[in-house]
Image (cartoon, rainbow, N blue to C red; front, side, top):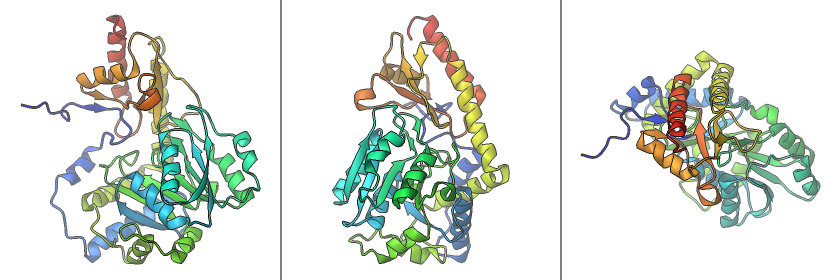
Length: 364
């Protein structure tokens, strides 16, 4: 019989993450038919709370897209930019690189600001592009490859000064770090279901301000499924143009209601406590945090002992503990431990105890 990896599993990955029992219960129920007023109310309620939690204006709209975060990234580029645009892309890892690749695929004129792994974005990176005719700016607020969190105030100031249309992928930072569309001057925000929202993977959400909506209304797209005009039209009545991930939308309503009741600041502060607790406990273990300016979402770790990063990931998996590996140049150098989802300080202790055991055995 094959091993059931979900039994007694401890998941420190950053998507999918550990889910609350109340969310899991919804996933085990029969699905309702979704072309009804009752289900429309579910979507409209989700839209209202997502706008509130993200600091969007009431006039903003939410696209409910059945597809991963990359689907939302690609569809945002398709709907929000055209061949007349000139876009700046921050590339500090695999997800920044993905934005650049998507621009190239869809023939959007773009220039990347290439950062070294772990490097933070500052005014010196941006100043060469002042007054150079750029119209848009694409950034992953938190580069999940490295754990680095970018300073959105610096980005806001630059975009305001140059009148740039700002699109932010906040998929792995939303609910883990402070985020507010109005405070940061963001026109479009991309979110995903499987990060700190702590739902199954399969849905992404794009929050659009009025400026973004006007751009979409003027755009004629050569796409059916990704045409945001269709989503905006049907969304007025609480529907999507195509069959959505019904279960996830029901789970989203439960999760958003819970977050609103607890308070978003309490959710963020708790994630910060879990992250800081873990970071404090790895002292005297042959693992180091290679750079600073980190999101609360995860901690990147560089092994300094006997094992490479990918060997550690494999060893932990054999003990039914999952962390995030890296690929490419970072495969043997860096792995990542997540702090989002239903992770507790007790869970941190379980992982730390295994690290200590590995160290005492001379493995780590």
